Structure formats: structure tokens, C-alpha cells
Amino acid sequence: MQTFWANLNVTTPWLSSARTDVAFFFAPALIATILTSLFRHDAVVNSPFLLFLILQGFALGPFHQGLTWFQYFDKANLQQYSHSQNLFWAFVAPILVVVFSTLTYWFSPPLLLFVYVVWTIQHIAKQNIGILLLYHNQARNEAIVPRDIEARSIETSAALFSFLFLNGFIAQTGWVAVAVHLLIAFLSIELIWLTVRFAMNLKRQVSVDGKSLNAPALVFWTLSCLAFIPFALAKDYGQGLFVALIMHWFQYVGLNAMLVRRKYSVESNKRLLIGGKPLLLFAGVGILFALVSMPVQAFAINPVNPNNWTLRILVGFVYGLTLSHYFLDAFIWRFREPFNRAAILSYLKPQFNTVPSHRDAAQNIDLYAEVI
Image 1 (tube, rainbow, N blue to C red):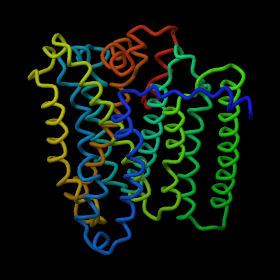
Image 2: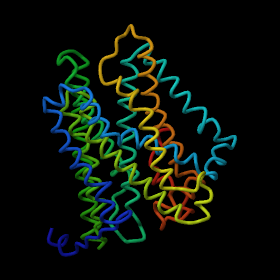
Image 3: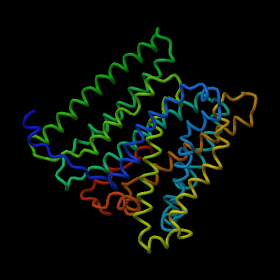
Image 4: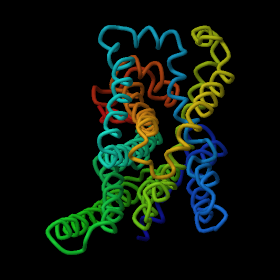
């Protein structure tokens, strides 16, 4: 331990700057935790409108979904998406996701809710892993824990706390309860083991190999592993996922803001943007999507009358918009694709450049690649 502290060299390589990173990648965890206290106030509990606004992050949720469509206003992106190999994934598949969601909710609301919750958890975890990998840089001689340990620890924590949430809704007797309890025990042991491996690997690299400790990366990994704890303690999936979602929304807005600021500060890139006003378009697509979707989403906050077919279709459509956002992110942020590396990754991680140092490098920093 003495060797560890003697050799400790803490660095703070921010993705953007200390102020920006704290605002978008770290402070939201505290903000969301404070906001959860509002769920205990009668004024919020007894007001569907206030509850809806809070659960939507005061429109931050739909705003972040709208930013997905910003990429379609870049002429170079649009040309790439229109190629025969991308046409289905960029234009047809998102519509099919919405149709699937609408029809599934019509016939079986619980089934769509299950798909929505599972995909949401997976989407959040993948983004956390992707951002953590963006913080790393082999060229800085920093201590980098192997990807399988970092990724599995985040994914295992998400799975563990999700099953703890599920455990509160099943009968505590019978084979289903036994299976869930065994799975919880297994995931708990695995998470402890991964955490120990993470700590030991980091300690060895710092104390023996003399590598620096990347403080933002370590803190971000910690927050990512803890993000789903409120889910395990909740009685409602919306409030349970609230902290993880608030963090996710802020992160996504921050990433896109960094991309827009860096990419379109170059005049040649700005000319590729329809309208040529990057900040106005950035805000516009987010606000427009929020204005269109939030009135519809407000219907989903209360139980839907099964005899009201119009409302059931509307709610399924709203869920579909979210699921299509998840799907499109998997396509747009797929960094194993050379075009996406050049169009997005090279601006988020300039030192990576547009050509990976080895053939697997791009796959190591995919934000959502394994969704599709």
C-alpha cells in the first residue's frame, strides 16, 4: 500500500474541460439524487402533471431524443445513410421499430413494457461503457483496466440491481423465486469479484508499472456501477430508473454539444449542415421533438383504459419513438464503421484520429454498437 501511495500520480484528462465534464458527466448524479426527494412530496404525488414533468427531467428526456435526428441534417451523413447498405437501417428500420412498438402495446402492454425496460437498461449501460472508454488514452501512459473487467462490472451491476427490483414484484415462494434468488446471488458474487479484479489491476499498474491514475475515468466508472442502485430500491420502474436516466440524458446532450461545437467550428463542415446554423439547429431539433412528443407522452403516465384503442395506439407509438432512438443510436454511433469514426469519433476523441491504431481499436470504443 505504501508503494501505491508513493507512486500515485493522479491526472485529470477531461473530455472537454473540467467545467463541462462536471456539468454533463458527474454533477447530474447528484442533481438526480436530489430530485428524487420530490417523489415523496404530496404536491408531486397528487399532481400527475408535476410528476410527469419531473420524470421527463423537465423536458430533458425528449430533448435528448430529438438530438438523434441532428445527424440527418448533415449532408455528408445523409448521403452516407442513403447508400444501399445503410438505407434500411437509417430510414426503414426505425419506422418498423415504431410499428412493432405500437402493435405490441395494442395486443400486450406488459410485453412492450418489458422490452422497453430491458432495452432502456441496456442502452444506459452501453452509453456508460462508451463514455468511460472515451476517457481512456493509451498514449498518456495511464492505468487502464482491461475492457472486459470495466464493461462487465457496469453491465453486471445494472443486471443485479434490475433483478433486485424484479424480486420485489414476484411471490417469494416457488421455482421462479428460487431462480431469481440464485441469479441475484450469482450476480452479487460476480460483481464483488469484478470489483476486486478492477481494484487489484488498477493498483498493480499504478504501484508496479508506474502508470498514472485517471481520476475522471475512475469516478465515472464508480458512478456507472452505482447508477442503478435506486432501481433496486424502487416500487415503480419510472422512478427507479430516474437517476440513471437523468445521468444518461445529460451525458448524451453533453456528447452531442461537444461534437457540434468541435465539428462545425470548421467552415467546410458548417457548409455541410442544412441551414448552416449548428447551435440553432442543435437546439431546434431537441426543442421541436420535445414540443411534439411531450403532450403525447403525458398520456402514458396513468394506466390506460384497455377499451380506449386510440389511446393505446398513441401510447405504443410514444414508446416506439424512444425505442427507435435506441436503435438509431446503435447505428449512428457504431464506431467500427470507418465513416462514423471520421464523422463523430474523431471530434470526440481527437487523439484517436480517424484511423484506429489496430483493427480492433474502433470496436473498443463503440458507444452503442452491440445493440444491433
